[in-house]
Length: 321
Image (cartoon, rainbow, N blue to C red; front, side, top):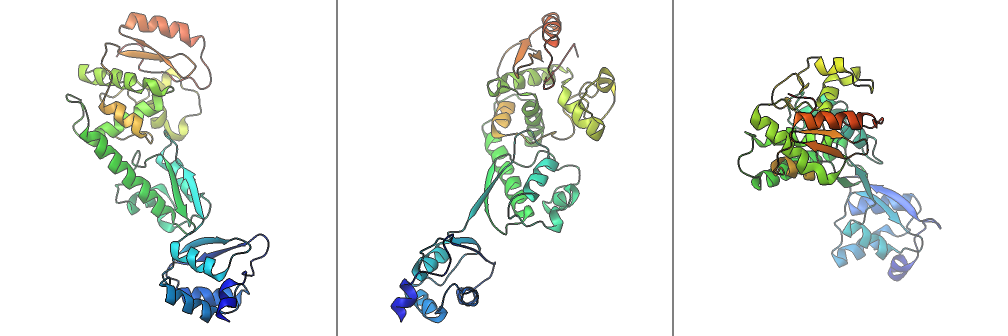
């Protein structure tokens, strides 16, 4: 009888069976549920085998039991935690709101009240409302069915803290940042201005030199972020003059918070800017930039490349300080 209970194929059909083991479930309770669903016939014998093998500990999650599997296969999977794994990717340059929306829309992610809004999520992470931007590390995350939105968000938040600390420890000397948070702000600007990964350190160099010289950063992404929902995709000269806490054409120094999720490469660039003399850059319209050391050279490049402007054109610290 025991051999039959252990070696007989489970009643999972040709396509196999997907089932969920809830957090806190016991092996005996799981076997009883599978018995009531008609998957197994001898739950007590299977449980006795698990005790004999020392495999009574099981993991929660979603399991796929392939066709032809036996009770031995089932116990092994439950004991090892061979659950179905899901993935979602948070993209560099997204905002906190976009990251939260992506997480909450993830397959098999449990939506919680704590993740129901940006302000609620910030509170759940222990961040002050309005200070959450930039603190989510963009990466691909793997998770199990039943993982909550806040669990994933907290993982991404803790990952950003670790990455920022690691990069801060390896920073160059003489940078114009009093805290790692200021470097995070700078990294977010670099992330939004970078069309070519190879240019990150060059853009960082321009921004750092401008800060050291007391020049305004004059970078369009900060203007766009400050406009919020008022931005319709068309950045005008009036927008560049419109005062907001983020408009680096108007304010001195860095904006008050990051404006996007920076990746490790942008953080590293912020903390290791490329030496040089350029103080200006303008987008060529293909994601790359022309860098200039003088305003005269920059204005000439602006006239040339503005003629090639595209919908995805990114401008830059422009036309003086």
